[in-house]
Image 1: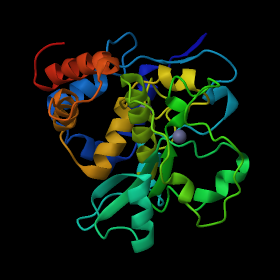
Image 2: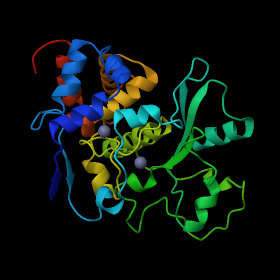
Image 3: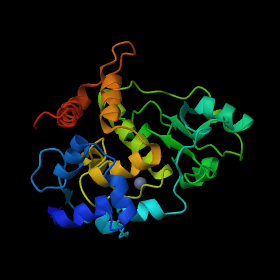
Image 4: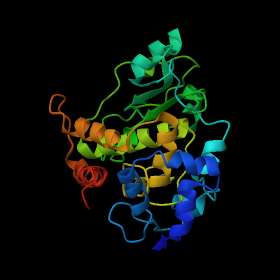
Length: 288
Ligand SMILES: [Zn+2]
Ligand SMILES: [Zn+2]
């Protein structure tokens, strides 16, 4: 196992940048917010761990990419930010998504993401079905079928019995598709994927700084090793695109986790919940 440990000065520059105006906007974070962001860069801190490489099939050795610091994110002309008329992220099951596709994207959409439990890529030839889905245009379609622990078993109930040839625009295969029970592991994996992919829609590239949901991932074991949330550098990118108080983000996430009204399995989120509380204690000015 290899640990990627960047010197703290390097992470600091990746977070603040070298441009005077960007260093100045960084000063708009409150003191506790800065404490959280900067404590996270110090080796051995309890909130943000370094990235580990477990094998050559992990993302970083398999896909050499330039790391994206805050400044290169900020100056990228292709990144997207919500605007006052386009500020809703729609997450739709595939049936609703297809209705939207017929009628065009809702006016106030920042992006629209379709989700399904049917395996979208049982064969390479299926790629064309959603070949138009594009992150740069604020649209994506994701299948969580392979996140089901039973997916690779022969008896998986969602497996297609025979090869079907699909014509462009024929979506009838999605009409009564099998939906596996939603376990907390399935939910956690799906949340990680959605957070990661929606991060790309904002223009956040793969993270090579610290353990982070924006790390690239080549296989399920590597995705499982990724945390659900953003490292300080990627958090600043998202914050600059949307503009929020960091504590509000964490409180909203906790609210979703603890909302008993819409019962959902959250056992697999326990570590994340403790992490959110720890961050909130720092943001509320208590010592960590
Ligand atoms: Zn990615
Ligand atoms: Zn990151």
